[in-house]
Length: 136
Image (cartoon, rainbow, N blue to C red; front, top):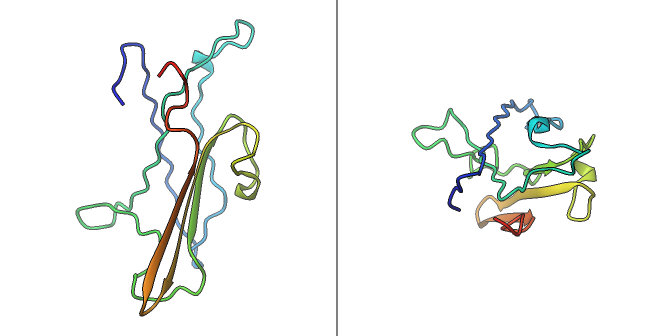
């Protein structure tokens, strides 16, 4: 999507480390938009697009994030999954966030299952609209 003359690009980086079980507790990354919003004046932002990029800086050359969190040829026993979301309010757990949750702007779920010898199945679900505001 082309950047308009009044468009503002906001970026945030959230770094995390997995525990011995390959898990991470709910993490919060926050972008303060209070300079662009006025409740008394009913002014706010028109959000055009939200993107998530997972990457592993330790991966040689590409930085591609392996959703399985392990070698593809090794069965994990538990299907790995990742859930990322953008909201206007903070949720205590990711279990409370879904397509029908209030104040959720964008939600992405990635889940992979594998059979050691037969297949690798990837399920990518994104709950949002491609264009979040009609004037974008």
